[in-house]
Image (cartoon, rainbow, N blue to C red; front, side, top):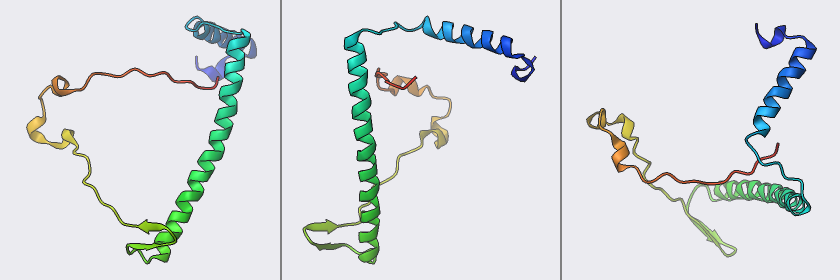
Length: 119
C-alpha cells in the first residue's frame, strides 16, 4: 500500500509516529535562555540574508567592471582588476593506477561540526 492509498486518519497516525520517533532523538528545550538564543540566531540570519544580497550585488558590479575592462587587467578608482588562474583539483578516481588501492590510509581524520537548521 502506498501513501496515496492511506485515508486521512491513517495519515495522521503515521505523521504522529514519525514525529514521535524524531522527537525521541532530541532534547526538547523551551526555557527562556534557549528561546532567547534562538530568537537572536533568527535575527542574525535575517541580517545575513541582507549580506547575501550585498554579495550578489558585489558580483554584479564585478561582472560590470570586467565587461568595462574588455576583459583586460585594469586599474582605477582605487582598485585593480586582474584575471587570476589556478590549476584544477586532481580527480584521483580517474587515475587507473590508483584503482583497487585503499586510499583511506591517506585520508585525513574526519571532522565533526554542528548544524543548526530550522524545523
